Picture 1 (cartoon, rainbow, N blue to C red):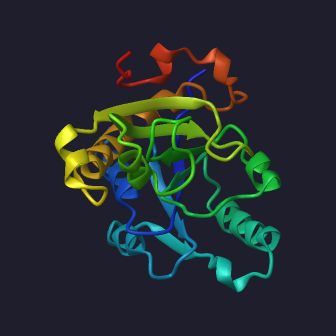
Picture 2: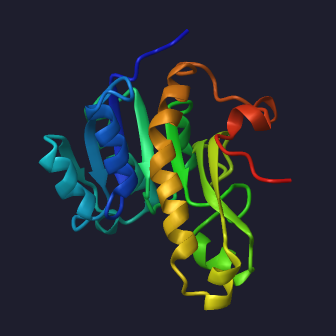
Picture 3: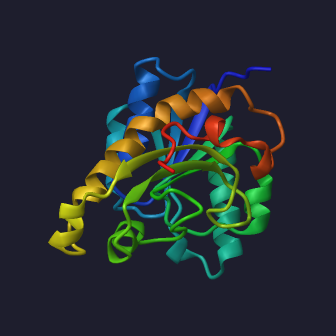
Length: 220
């Protein structure tokens, strides 16, 4: 049964480029629902100003103000629940969340990760791809589970890492820019996909075929 995503809360830690893509798509009517709350763990996150400029409520839950991760998670959960969201999106949110927190929002929390998972889980994905002289890069939208960057995949978008970029050295921004464009460009369509499954248990990874889980399939 299709469920409209009436209220979307986005968690960020920085400039919020993916957040902005989702906000703009909602305003333009390309996804059903609205971003109603943006929360950051950093008061200086640039994305907060963008959200405010669009009339969206913002909050800061600074992880440095809490003695333990559990205490931070509890305060973050309070901030999320205040907005009563149907969907929570981690868009450049650079904190690892505890298992109890993740289970609290099971089936309605997504992460946008800058690599073709399961490859390059974790941080510094662009630099690691270049260091390994990889030929493929991209981004993944997946459900959040206690297994960090290991939840079932909703969609992926792929870009090539050009030989010229590899030869230019590990500091090249070419692959990063293309991956970033794929990341921000794929987000609204994948939210529409999620709308069809809201309220259902998180699917097992094995139940999502490579065709249904990938917007742009990697080359063999």
